[in-house]
Length: 205
Image (cartoon, rainbow, N blue to C red; front, side, top):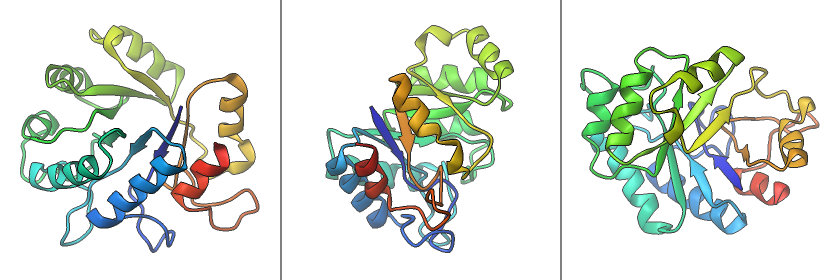
């Protein structure tokens, strides 16, 4: 399975093909599905300043728009701890306010409050992609009370944008699911700008 991570915290200043607006995210998601990705991961943005947000009025609008355009596409979002909450007291309150939740979200196990947040996500029927950066993180995943209900483990490499390491190649050789996209790398193997998100999916496909 190929998942494409569309944007992360990046903007068009970082790469000209990073989708930021609702329309751009929708178009990119549809194009990635057509290129062969059954799953996309994206960070919804506030329309006024383009800042990432978990606020219901921002998050719901983007998820609903992508869902309407690509109803069979798996949708993943982020719960990273420094994303704007739009006035919610914490991340648990923010995700409980969503009326159009994604299918699953990434949950970094090194962050504070992940046990409570993971339980709240599962209570809402939102799947968990457990973000693991280290062996200690893997241990934390196994120790979580909801460990057996994790849908996917997301192995996060720490040398961002170093394509010489060929992480995706290693994943393909091992026969495991892989993630590509501009959130994960802005540069191609030759050091130039990375292909667009659909281009990366097509290359791996």
